[in-house]
Amino acid sequence: MQWTAWIGLALGVVMVATPKPGPPPVILELGPVVPTPAPTPKSEQRKRLVTVITVQNSPKGDTVASFEVTDIADEGKDRTRTLASKTYSLAEENPDVKDLKEHIFRGIRELERDMLKYAEKAGPPKERAPLAPQTRP
Image (cartoon, rainbow, N blue to C red; front, side, top):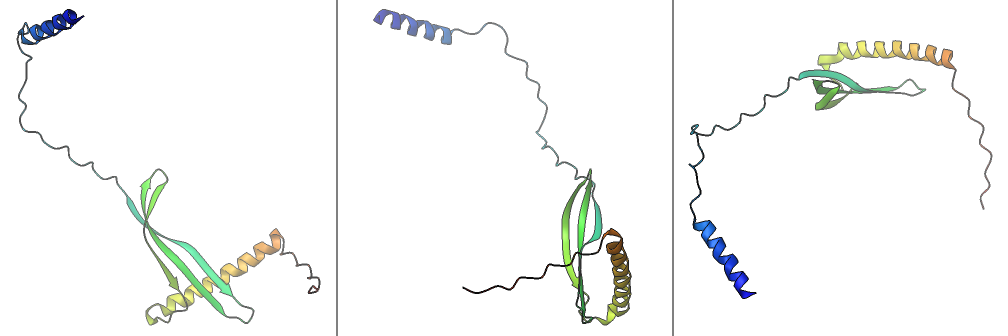
């Protein structure tokens, strides 16, 4: 057994020490490595839209209206991402937008009239059933 191990070791040394036949591989010098440039960013279109409108009316005639405006990046193929968002309240007193605020409220009232017509055609709201008196235990 020991002889087999010695013979295997001797053959391994002879194979490593023997020069390999044939010339070395051909290596072509190509110059310095240039890093791969960053990919060109995809084309995006910046768009702004009103995403939420909230109107709260009371039977007494008070109205509170607010809306949210969102800026998005449209990447195409139904892909968008949000860039910025801000909520505006029409209850704020700002003399710069007073005329625009009145115009918006006229538009809201017109929209409310159209919505009430829609509700009549689609079916008015159902009346609630009266609550049964409850007894306490």
